[in-house]
Image (cartoon, rainbow, N blue to C red; front, side):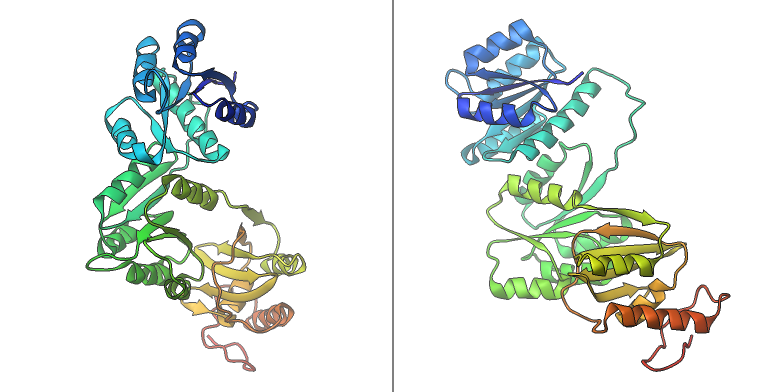
Length: 378
């Protein structure tokens, strides 16, 4: 059975748009104005989730949601607010019975994800033990900013999602310690911070945790700043202050829901040829036993590779040689600088040649001392 959701707003156009976008997944009921909403809750409830705008005639949305919960306590409440009511919305999430708030305007998929989080919370409120569901994968997000208000706004928003775990750090120095201890899936960082600024943190991430995506916050992203960031990370998302909490949420959603997948049962060299044929831009993570390597493709061309201290051609030769590999595909190239200039076919032919020279018994060899034109050397 689809969950029953009540949307409350003074704007009929808002209700029509979101009812149309969400009705395929949820049982959406709309109420135009406070009087209709109170009648709907009293006569046709209970509702799993109620979404109400803060700014309505007769009663603000926060007071209405509190009254609705008095009628059916397990109901999950979501508050919509304009930028002018941001402080009130934040306080409501931390001190009232509000799951989360959304700052208008926002896209439908943001509300869709929020409703899904609300359903999970509603089940908890009803004390339903849903053992048949697979455990959720928690994505850990590290927020780095010396402004406690920024950390509070972002973390209070993200904590309402069951699939996100939020950690905070007041500067880059603290952030590096967290990165060394806990597996972080995404970093949101300011640039101007004491002790260790954002640029130094980006350099540390690039050198030690290159696979972690980063969202950079700054008051102004100039061409010089953008060039410097790209020089450190290759690719990155930027967001200028003052904060747009919906934009941050959307960036995180896009980052964690990029197209991709896993491939097994095909050789790395064969799959690389498919990538070239399709002119695909992507990053391949190749895993074999306890090893991992990264191959960076831009429009089908291999531009860089890295593994275990090796980079460029040497890393590519090493990765291609691995047997029974698992390949993970991410639809973004996380490098911009071209370190490999040979055509892919030449790389593959040279890798096979070096592998043959090493012999079948040398599965764990490295090409660390390889020089162009030389035979394989350990």
